[in-house]
Image 1 (cartoon, rainbow, N blue to C red):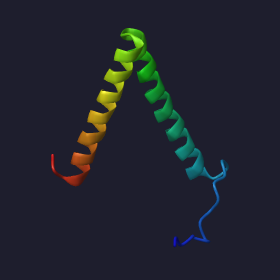
Image 2: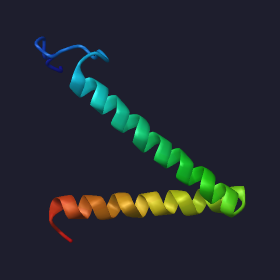
Image 3: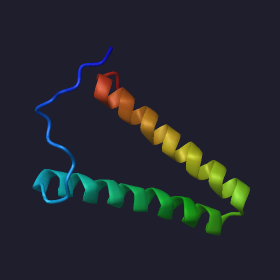
Length: 71
């Protein structure tokens, strides 16, 4: 069903591009978690979560429109 690329390198932290990818993922995850925690602290838990989720969904939608060239 799916073709597996047998020449692809396995993930290993010693590869420079893999290290960079891992650091970028950790950075964006910390930003995401920090934003949720800030909104929950600023407002109460339910409102903060809703505001954070709505903000991220709007940012994602705008990003998709920009990538498609529609905005």
